[in-house]
Length: 317
Image 1 (cartoon, rainbow, N blue to C red):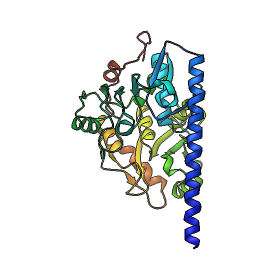
Image 2: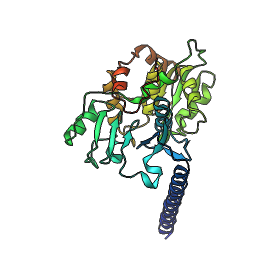
Image 3: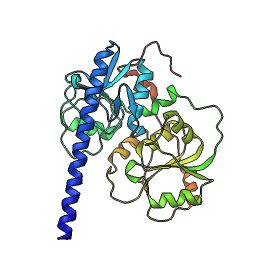
Image 4: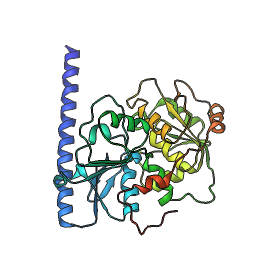
């Protein structure tokens, strides 16, 4: 009887959250569409990515997704719209950029530049209009298996961030280790204990509740090395040449391994697998991984050469 009541309350709570989510989404659609119609501009780019906009401002939820806005705005010098945040953007060309989104967000008007797959388990929802580049060779192999033409041009566009936000010439290293967690790992007790014990030598870098994306980059480069269960924690570290280690807290996770291996293959980074953490972390043991790190191989110009919205007047370093 008690179990039945508990299940009933749980199901009711889930239903309430779903209704709340739909109301919030409807509100965002109405506000954004009205804002766009009132401030209509010719120089607009429609992205099809996993981020949330309200009146042309980003709701910070995950820097790996939010970077789409900041990077493309700087490269194009145009206003950024998100396909999912407006009523009247259907049937328009939409650009898929940063994120493991091809398997669930692709439509027939999508143009892919740097996106990847999360897992290759399901059929592609639609054949995209065009593929210019993908995150890595595993994504390319999947697309070809679905009958999609895909060039051998690889790279997560987040690797281009140093082009718009170069690192300072001299950095004062404040911490030996920075920890970046996937949103599903936030609050992990092992990491919490480690950060508390090594508070003067290790820091946790929040990529979900941040205020300024540039501050996140500064916090990364202030560390001697990074350990991360977030793919874009690893990618941002690689982009700024900070040694890093892929970590997981169990053999089974929500994200699996496909997207990580796809990225590592794209930058010719040898990897045996993640460091699986199940017990107390030791600082000296983690620091040993720093010496085995090798810089990635990435052809930024090749990826930029097929960028569909770069401002031709913009000079990049």
